[in-house]
Image (cartoon, rainbow, N blue to C red; front, top):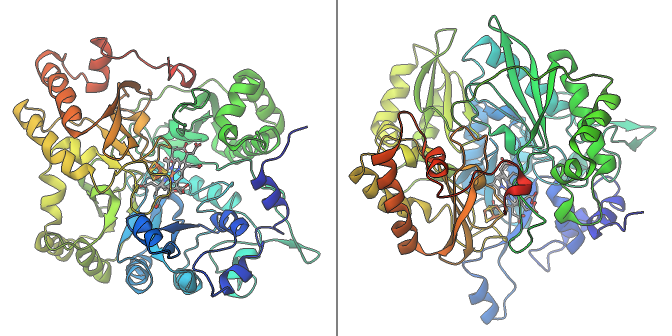
Amino acid sequence: MQKLSEVEHIKDNSDYLRGSLNESLDNRITGALFPDDTNLIKFHGSYQQTDRDLDSERKAQKLESLFSFMIRIRVPAGVATPAQWLRMDELSDQYGNGTIKLTTRQAFQLHGIRKRDLKATIRGFNDVLLDSIAGCGDVNRNVMCSPNPNESRVHQAVFEVGKAISDAFTPQTTSYYEIWLDGEQVDETQPFRTTKTEGKDVEPVYGKTYLPRKFKIALAVPPHNDTDIFANDIGLIAIQQDGELIGFNVTAGGGLGMTFGMPETYPRLGDVLGFVSVADTLAVCEAIITTQRDFGNRENRKFSRLKYTVDRMGLDAFKAEVEQRAGVAFGAAQPYEFTHNGDPLGWKTTESGKFNFTLFVEGGRIVDTPQYALRTALRAIAGIHDGDFRLTGNQNLVIGNISPEKRPAIEAIMEKYGLLNTTFNQTAMRQFALACVALNTCSQAFAEAERYLPSLLDKIDGILRQTHLDREPINIRMTGCPNGCARPYLAEIGLVGKSPGYYNLYLGGAHDGSRLNKLYLEMLDEAAILRELTPLLEAFSRERTRGEHFGDFVIRKEIVAATHHGLDFHA
Ligand code: SRM
Ligand code: SF4
């Protein structure tokens, strides 16, 4: 019998995620919630945070920390309408810190919202049919999908499967509507469905204690691994025949978080279980989710992710359990090839003769600065756009489905505000770079990431130009802690914050996201990072074989050993 963790008791006693959230929200004495509710609000898509830049100053003045909330708004498969974009833009000013964050899982985040404004903010995006249920918490999160659904018929079909998965595994509790919108589900046009039986909430898939831990699903259409499917609890690799989607190779057990000093925790790539048809996909996903629900560790949250369940059960036993629950036998995995895990930037024509423009967004942050009025530009585009917006899994933005009639006007706005210049005139490494939020809002951050990486890249750009590697797409990713939110362990160059100003350097990830990297050196400051990277990049430029990627080069040269499984990550 497992000794359940504290969070399990909080979920169990919460009456389907209500807890005392209403009382917490009404309490005017503090800007914070009651402690248990800080856990429950995650399931509603929000985190209580403090402004870490101000924490010590406020403490010195014996003031309460400056509490505010981050809200993560789900955007299934990353597709948003211009009206939704405009509303996010408006809410970020009205209640947030004037910025919108495009996350590494194709969602929106608003930061800096005061407790008193939470309801108004949620109402604000509910009006345009967006919600934040399951943005965070021990449930299936925002489902990721290759962000160009209209690029081909297969993309469109994969997008439909992604939507169906998202709908099937959205929590069904009425508490979200009750707490934030003062009622139960208003009508069936609302963003997600709720279920009651005999007047009581039910969660047909999750049960009242939901999953042991967060759960993530992504779909990808080869050759683009732009959703980094191997980092997900479930990954679905689209398999096509004669231009039609026939099914998916299913992966299970991916996840990247680890804790420094605890080698029993490790990043792990999903294993390919086998092939399933489109018709069986939902049943197989449900079987994986319920296997994790019933077999996952509910005692110690450090070991609760599916990756540890798979390694504890053994892959064969896990697969057999899934097949038995789904009533589906996996077929042999079908051949596929990924070539990269970044976003191809710039213009693309869709099969129906419209246009997609993938815009580079540094750190995924939509903000106006004196030099670059990105938020203003996108507001202007949303005001006239007749297509949609697709958030990518690499913190970029596709202005999608632009009609030939609208393209000149949209292009003129992009030209006026410098969007074309930012997208095209960068080193390829910067275009591929990812950085997590880290300071000043993330409670877990040991070091800077999003606020610092651009200035580090300014210096690395110099080395790239000298070594003629400025057009070489080497992927670099930085996080402020080992949790892995910018997927640094899948990067060719991974930098993971250890303490303020110091990073561990990981090398040897595959360019297509199919191999983890390995720790090369610990506790490097900026000078040391540049000192270490310079000779490696020089050697790469001189000695690489034709078409060889940097991640493969450092392994061939035995600078680091290849990591074949999460269990070897620390070896
Ligand atoms: Fe993450 C926790 C931000 C993608 C692994 N993540 C957090 C929190 C909520 C910090 C916290 O627990 O207090 C961060 C909020 C910071 C802030 O101020 O906004 C945070 N994670 C993010 C985002 C916004 C990073 C970004 O810059 O884009 C991404 C939001 C995605 C979304 O829309 O849902 C984000 N996080 C990821 C990913 C990447 C992915 O899913 O592809 C990972 C690695 C994959 C994985 O899940 O293993 C990731 N985040 C974590 C973990 C480690 C989980 C683990 O198994 O150990 C934590 C900490 C935790 O869960 O205890 C975490
Ligand atoms: Fe915060 Fe760490 Fe995630 Fe970065 S990787 S957002 S520092 S939890």
